[in-house]
Image (cartoon, helix red, strand yellow):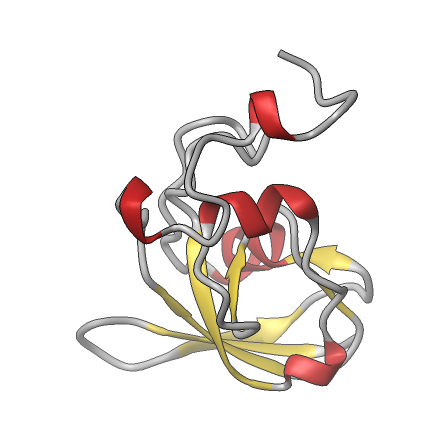
Length: 116
């Protein structure tokens, strides 16, 4: 199982093992790290925005939903969407103001076939 480390704003990092292809949000819950999320992991709110500090090659490609709620920086991901297969280090960032998003708007109207 891959190792995941969560860096908090204050205090010691939390780390643990998580199954391969696990979402970052699920891994956070497994190790007791707090990653805000308000939409139930549906990529609608952007509250679970994180930065991959180490191990980006071990992460799944950025989805259209993630692009709509993050900047163009490939290290910025949504914890509810990004999956990983190898060791990573993550820092929670929180939601991004709409004017700074790469997709410049909410996901739902921008992704064909996305459930409303």
